Amino acid sequence: LDSPVSVSLRAWSLFIPGDVGMSNTPGAVFEVRLRNTSDSPQSGSLAFSFPGPSPQEAYGDCAFTHAHIDGNFTGVDVYNGRGIGYALGVISQESIRTGGDLGLDGGSWSRIGSELPVTAGQPGASVAVDFELPAGGVRTIRLVLAWYSPEGEAAGRPMVDDQSWDNGWRVMKPGLPSSAGRRYAHMYAARYRDALDVAEMLADHHESLLGRILAWQQVIHGEKELPAWLRDSLVNILHLVTEDGFWAQSKPPIPEWARPEDGLFGMNESPRGCPQI
Image 1: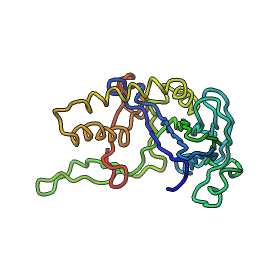
Image 2: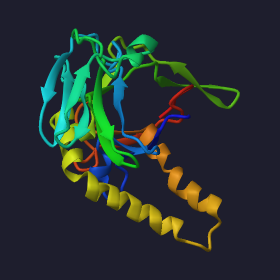
Image 3: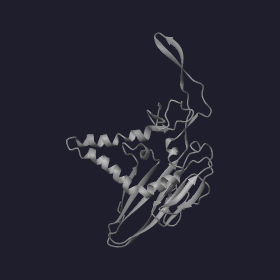
Image 4: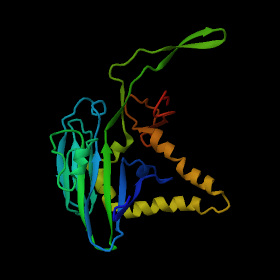
């Protein structure tokens, strides 16, 4: 773009091989770097909008409370009566504005410099940071998004073995559908109280955590005997563990053989179509 302010972004979430507890953190950091490439002062607004949980993800409880938070994490804590929610804000005591989510409304986006949508108990929210840059100035704004849902639901129609055979092939028949499915307690719910707990941890330790992430990745990127495409693939293929993995606590309906420290871990074959664990 021909804007006098250039923008770059580094977004990261926690994945540290060997540290399963820290890797099991439901949050992400977005580091936005603003650079004034002109010879005159520039001002503007940086906004982040999040739609929040869908009615299905919120288990039908779509009345959300929006609580303003000040501290090393400054932003908004959004939650419903079932403990489902998220925290959205910035690291450090920035002066920010909060409001409802901007969605696909171009008019709302065009007005972020002066106002954000009114908050009326909706699941979505937005935050905006106003900035001023001197000529050639650079500023980094770090935003945090942390999410929390104590349980995950597995519904669908599991297959039941009826022990019958047809020309040498075992016949499987669909099981009875469940109206409520089975709800499993997320493992991260044993480590964090809520989304605000996650957001404050990320705000307090973001520098050291990013350093640990870059350190393990650099070990692979530094292997000059491997071709560049393979080094890149060895790092990025691990995203499948976080995108498709589900880690549940050893609580019903999980059988007693699952140890508390292990829980039960599964990976979804496809998050978009024909999913199988």
